[in-house]
Amino acid sequence: MMIEINGKNAIISVSNKEKTDILAKRLIEEGYRIFATRGTADYLRKFSLEIHDVEEISRVPEILGGRVKTLSSYLLGGVLAKDRNDPDIKKFGIVPIDLVYVEPYPFIERYLEGKTDLVEDIDIGGITLLRAAAKNFSRVVVIPGSGYIDEILENMKEGEISLELRRKLASITFRMTSLYDYMISEWFGSGNDIFITGGKKFVDLRYGENPHQKSFAYNLYKPFFEMLREGKEISYNNIMDAWAAWELSLRLGENSAVVVKHGSPCGASVGTNSLQMAHESDPVSAYGGVYAINGSVGVEEAKFLKDKYLEVLIAKEYDENALEILSKKKNLRILKGNQDVYRIPDMKTAGNIILTQEWNRRSGNIFEIILGGVDDATRRNLEFGWEVIKSIKSNAIVAVDGMRVISSSGGQPNRVDSVKFCLERAMKGGKITEKTILISDGFFPFKDSMELIHEYGINIVAAPLGSIRDEEVIEYAKKKGMVFVKVNERAFKH
Image (cartoon, rainbow, N blue to C red; front, side, top):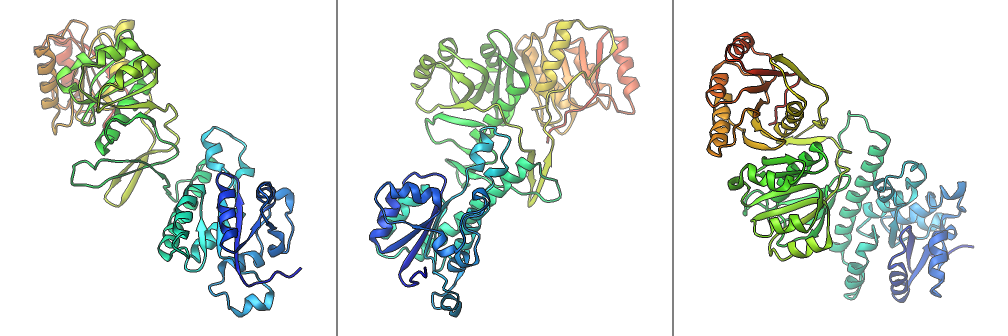
């Protein structure tokens, strides 16, 4: 049966039916004829709406078990025709389409849920329709999801849907289809010849690194946190510090706590009472910092934090009573951490160049005893300290004792200054004991650092080797009766 080509026509094909009946009813009131794919048509007819089957304009039935529904020259021609009076419209009996509303198969949602067999969730026809409509936005309205229906309905109150809104939705559509393809590529296991990023706007930010810089946050794969309570609007620096704290806590493992200030851990601990121990690593630096707990926050932890000044708290889970206590802190952002965070590579930018690398995951057996001996407790402290040092900017130095950080320093142009600052802070707090270990992220180029370490009373040192003066460093340690542990990797962070 030939369809009358005059009048306004809409195509609806959605996996998510939310608000679809509301939109369809309003479109019919505005004089649209609605053509829908089988599942969508069956749904809309439950509301006593007059719905046409999309086969009436595609001229082919759904085939291959539903794999092909809308891939038809007649249907796509009706979407892509720049002009309703194009001679081919009349010549081939093509029905011009004025509005396309498509919600693709929920590939992304199912991927994020951890589903593995996703081939049949890859949408082809729906994505094609969206891209075609977005390309022809000057004539066709594209609606790339239920989240935009309210805006469409509001705009229709003014008459025809505005060109400004059609252009905006076209831009959103191409960004959305780009993200869709990106996630499919990630699921397949993409090669590294082409780098693609895609993400949805995640949260509104107060500002960037400084108040005069605008900033935006998008999530790739899925965000590393869920916002439980925002307090005041989260900022760029809050997110950067929250990530640094949470990622380190994941590497340290269960029952760990981390405090980060300006991107660097100033406190960390693992084990019983880890939150208090992490705070006491450097309570001055912890003021106004970000706290991460790889474990449950209960009433005891909430009471400890209620009088502390912190910007952000991120944890694995929270007791309801603890949340009630913490929610009384007016500006505190309370986040629930996501533990599945390594699906995308570690990414940084240098101007307009994107750099990627593998994540610096938890190290294995990398310690080699060169001088002296270490017991099991010392070895656990070495493993703990090495994970912490990975999160400190080079030249990084950390002093650990009893599975907690007692002092740290990093970001200095030379290693001697980093050693000195770390030792002075540790000595000031009276925290150096015979079990204290000092760890360096790279080799000591001269023995001057070892001289400082010995002067401050630390007897156990761990560092990579690789300097032309390694023998001098080892000989000095041997002469002073120090324990020296070679670390068979380095941990530079820039």
